[in-house]
Length: 171
Image (tube, rainbow, N blue to C red):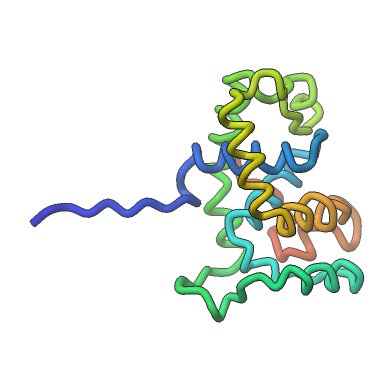
């Protein structure tokens, strides 16, 4: 009997690298590393966006997305905190890979910000990221504009609204 290997995009650090490049390209500027990680989780699993507790104006823009609901998807995802913890190792690996390749600005990383070094990113990857961002324009705009507008600290921060552990990333 032959062996079958199942590939999970969520457990592929190279897929995570590409998602992070997509997010940074869509944003066009530096963002906190923790925010990048949260946005990456929702880019990987957009059906989880319906779990968020959002202010009314952002909730209205979310409804305009008309994205798939969890009930309409094939696989059932565990709790948000579990998904968050599972992604940490792959996100950490992706960030190290991006840094090692010189695609993230090291001075920004010292301040816990991710800033893409656009001149270092291969043209083919930038083109593919731009193409995918265009295909998913509404989702990308929601992530990098609306969701990214929520504070990362304070009483109603993005972590609390998403139901993520308060202790922060494990890695």
